[in-house]
Image (cartoon, rainbow, N blue to C red; front, side, top):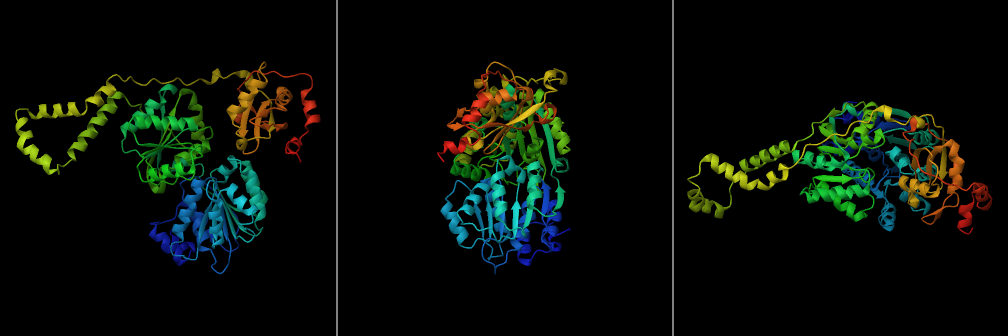
Length: 579
């Protein structure tokens, strides 16, 4: 399909597409539109990374397919975050510009549910929602999904990573079996594959740049530096390019706040975005960033989901993500719509293995960037000041009069060279002093493979499960801290840790798994009495990306596990609620 006119879309939608300036379909749109609009409503699995145009790929057929004679919700789109939910709703509103009989409603947590109920009641025929709020509305019988014709799971992998497995199962179970289901995902984890096998019928499968980031117009560069000098490097890279308009990705909320504050202290326009902020504050930051009142946005991965700003020049990884697919998501936010983009990564020597894993996964070739020197940054700042001077015109009549009556006469004895040097020396004195004592960057050596501890290579892991997760405040650091406190005398190898919404899975050395269960049973953490049980074989150290972490451990050899099972069983949750 070379143009949208060949897609089979109606005239009203094609007119809106033309108004938006869409000329020819992206690869994912060219594959998705004919399959989605074809007779038979066959299900579809599309592996497509961020920035490939997938919203139009599923959104245009949804808008085109609304039947004005049919009451109720006809299409449902599920996505991981509020920001993405609102963005999709805005895009669908643009697609429906000339279809006044199409009403799109966004439903999400953190906003008044009664307003959303009224919007649904007033004739919404397409609903875009986050899993938690959508299920809430279904359970309240305010959102009726028993007659929907199309269901879209957008960024399915991210919804599953965020722990929405139970909500997705409940929502999908409530929808008709004969609907058309469209699943869009950058990756295809086993949980997403299980959803497709359980709820989809003989789906078409397409792939459009889901892991091949190397074909896009993005230059991938890494800068190797010591961890302690990461921020100084970030600041100098920004100063080298004052026209930078980009997103800086960090791992933690605390790091986001700290870096954004330090950038503002340095005189740079930076906003912070993370999950601990109120919804009003997040909306305000995004509004300022879209208007370019902030030229830089410092964000966590989850908070930046749904960020759709088409003019980003840079994506900077202050820390490399643990999973290669997350890097693909991040870098996909620049270089959109055929434009060129830059993806910078600040890495230490010991992070080079992660970089190679990303290269292999995404078919990317990273170029090592030249570390900026203080002299180079100073030179660039001076040249940009000169460009600013050259482009300045004197329009103030008072200043013009003063120049002619006093200034020119007073400076007439200075030569051209003296005049320029004196003005630059005065204007740039503070800039010169800022860089005169700066030292060159020192790189951290890459850790050779032989330094890995051989004793962790052949460990058999057992996976344990704790009935508590993100919803209860659980995170990997809290889990390890709890283990350190409860079992302090013996070192035990720890493998992969997976914190989901209501459950936490973690791998331990099989030889010590019973002891760990014994040590954690009956533990009350943050008011939650933990239930711990063996879940199954864990991933081998060499494949899981875990392994090697140890902690000291102590446990009661008097049969504490048996006492817990007898006293609590695994019905402790019921007993705790007084049922």
